[in-house]
Length: 215
Image (tube, rainbow, N blue to C red; front, side, top):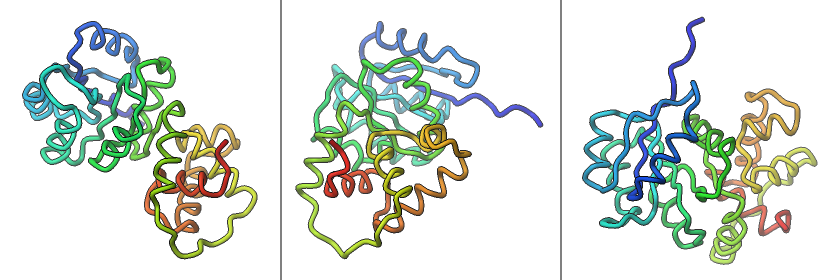
C-alpha cells in the first residue's frame, strides 16, 4: 500500500520568527509546510496557490483581523481546516473562531508533539481546543446555553469518553487512553454526541461543564 501524502500546511502569522519556529516544529515526514504569509491578502493568495489541507492562523495580525481572515479563508476554501495558533487565551476569541469555522484553537506555548497532533486531528475532521483555554470558554458557553430537551443517560464508559473529550483530547488520544482503535474511539465519540443531542465536540464539552464533569 502506498504511503499517504504529507499534510499540506500554510502558516499565517505577522512575526517572521514565529513563522520560522512553527516551520521548525512541523519538520516531520507527515507534514509539509507549503508556504507562509504575514497578511490577509498573502494568506488568501497562497491558500489559492498552494491548496493547503490546514492553515495555521493567528487571531491578531499587524495589519489585519485574524478572525476576519478566517472567515474569508473558509468562504474561499471551505474544505481547508483552519487551526488558530495564538497567544490570546480569550473566551470571546474562542467562541468567535469556532463560530467562524475554525477547527481548532491552541496557544503558542503548545509543545511540538501537541502541535503535530493538533494538525493531524483537524486534518482528520476533528476539533481541537487547548486545555488552557477550554475551561473558561466552555464555562462561559455553558452559562449562555438555554436549557434543552433531556438527553439520554450515558453509560460509565461514555461518561469517561465525554470527560476526555472535554479535556481537549482528540479521537486518536482518546483511543490511546482507552486502549481502543481509532475507529472504536470515533464510534464512542459519535455515540456520546448523539445521546447528548449535540452536533459537535464543543457543544458536548459544554454539556460536560453543565454536568460538573470538568473541574
